[in-house]
Length: 263
Length: 342
Image 1 (tube, rainbow over the protein chains, first blue to last red):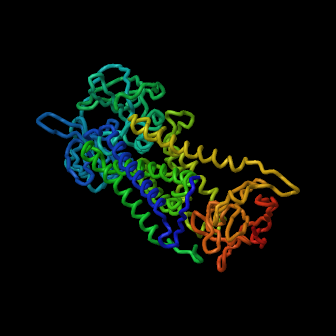
Image 2: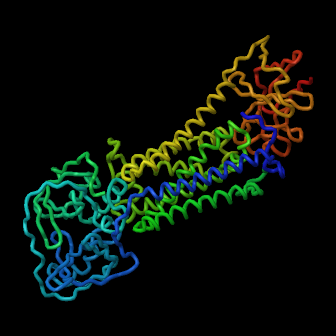
Image 3: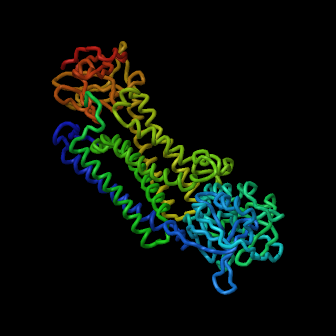
């Protein structure tokens, strides 16, 4: 140890000698420089966030045709004969269904009926979703049954991408994908939020596929081990207006070692 | 030294120390937030909070971990050690904000209990790349909580300095968990070489300082003393400075031999308060004063002056000419030993 004639005792006034003072000043300044430099390095090094939106503090009322095929959606006419299928989600990491139960008890089959829903919009890259936080804000506008969107088979495909939970990916969280977000996505999909395969091609154009089992039923638990990992998925792709639906056998999902190209 | 327990025994230096901690933390958070909001404005407020406080906690942990070895290498840094607990508690608060927001964000409002979710939402425990890194962060946070909540003299006295010290040495385990948490988590996705470089550099600095200190201390512990009729030859009287001590290892215990008022006394080197090295202390007002927190002991009997009750072991010395000899057999704590006069 360096020889130090000075001796600091906290309860003795002015026991800090001038050399000690100088050493302390040096340490404090160095620490502050390290703190400031680290703040700059860590903040500047973050990957860019996407411009997805979650309107947490404002509610929007939308009216359209309800369909559950297999995931609950509201088909809204956004321009003449142009429809957008808005994915319905519940509060937190849950499906929209608990918020539809009350109305479904009164009107057993809501499919094709016109509903009005007030909730928080989530949107990104052409897709819109809505979070329902109160079952009182789901109301029946018209009991007349209207035809829902048709599904057209596109082809059998093998796609590479990442299974994400659409609620976080399209706006609630940033980033709503990848390893950091994996646990949250597992909770969301386990809680009933529809799984979506997100892909990005070489031209950086993304496409999204709602995943169902081969019979077109919902899937959840069977795909939990693959969420948030770059994967290769085989299935039959169908087009449902502005969404693709992909029928898959979860046992055929392959985790691939490549870096996910969706981020 | 204090007889009763107060939340904080404030003094001018502690206040300055804490002001620097708070202002530095504010500087970090403000800089991080401003840069992010200006250059990466699509961030969400939750992500901003999680990242700002998480990275702040890591940087603070690095500063905390260099203080110990730095003080062992240069005693002028000792006043930083004196109030290190406040730095530790502040770091825990930053880590808690990071952990609390992350647990709420990623695990709450789901179909299972958030704590259960931390351990079960990702079950890839057998894979390094896919390892559930949040478990590591959660365990580190628990360790930091135990350390922060016992960072008070009340626990130090009631748990005993030995147990308390062992408990607080778990900071190294927490550091390991945190590094693994970051490398297996954030760095799998946020792959900037600059951020990875900062943590590698931090590890190198911490490891080098600890290794240098360990080598220095090993020299003291490995020094061989010549034995003569049950007495160990330790040094020449001129090697000890007035009102100061020299440390020797006898029977695997470190002993401090103090020189004062033309007398020599030897006591066990470890302070009863927090394990500070008494041999690096000084005689002030006739008492051996610990360099860490100023705890005092009388050189002739190793007892803290009344009304304090701390006691350390004492040793018998003898002089042959100017050569100092020590009887390696320690007396019971607080045993009166006639100082060796010269």
